[in-house]
Length: 118
Image 1 (cartoon, rainbow, N blue to C red):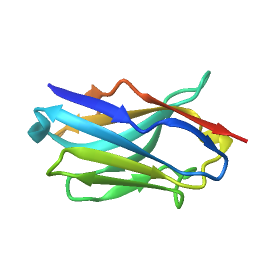
Image 2 (image 1 turned 180 degrees about the horizontal axis):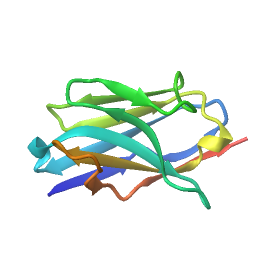
Image 3 (image 1 turned 120 degrees about the vertical axis):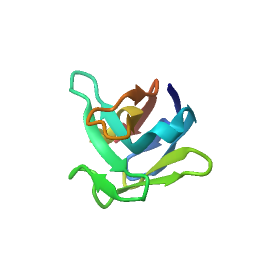
Image 4 (image 1 turned 135 degrees about the vertical axis):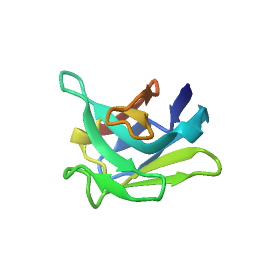
């Protein structure tokens, strides 16, 4: 099992920045790709960004150029640096981990709220 705990959410003005952190513990050696997802009220959960063990990244079109995902494999931390935040970025952000050779994400954090005021 892998436990994921997010932190760093909060209230920020439009155009501002936040950095989310995700601390992983447990059987992290069984995981490779980490991802950040978000879910706004009344909307489906959507992928924001992913990062593999070797640092390859992927971003949703809506955040590309504004958000940066990174990881520290020694400390088992994953970050999401969010710049130029917009009101439409407001959501609960979730960290997720995928076991090696799996397609779906097996482990999820409890989420952290990001609110962007206009």
